[in-house]
Image (cartoon, one colour):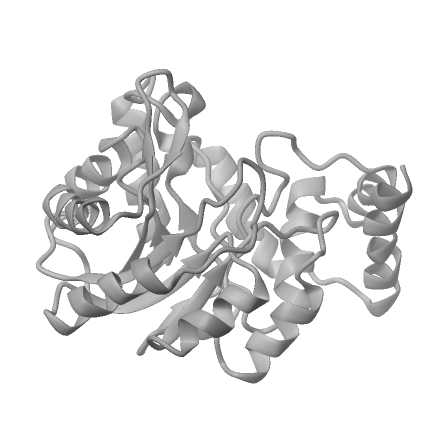
Length: 288
């Protein structure tokens, strides 16, 4: 697997694993096959993954309990990153949850369901709009997280679904060790932000690295993949690894075969000519 980057005070391999797809359809309820979900987690760690991304609102309470069942007691060096700031409605909706009581409860739920005394990294997910980041002060929720950090319940704090202005506001309150935003080969609004964070040694974990609920589709991507004898998704992951040294990938899957395919992307070599061709994916999406 390719390289490492600092996440807080730990170095993690740049190709990790996201647990979201282990929950039921729509990231709600239990998995269709619990044994298979446990097996994927164990295979990921056995394959060298030491960075797992999760949240207690996946399910809710499903993926964290699966992680505990599959991996506890956790191997040395495994970094589990979780998110708070949202909750699930009974109708499967995604709702903001960042009052003081919401955040404190969420931290304790994560601790209990993961079987931990302290959470290594907690990302505050800003939900000021239904789609993507939107401006709004994050001072109040981050102040709560900083208090929980001083109490020893959280070791490091990150941000998710945020704007550059919110990141700057957050860094005035506490150290921010990572940012998790929507970014992939076709969705490149954070290009400048990624480079700025890299210069500061701050990790960036793109969510929906393969397009999320609407998988990436591009004739350019398909053509490159065919020439390389790889899948389009492998090429998309390999591009992200080449894009910047601070990018940490967390592709998710509930399939061991798909997991192995994702991890193999770390060995895929992309020439400068190929990278230049792939830059056309964002341009073609933007003009469509």
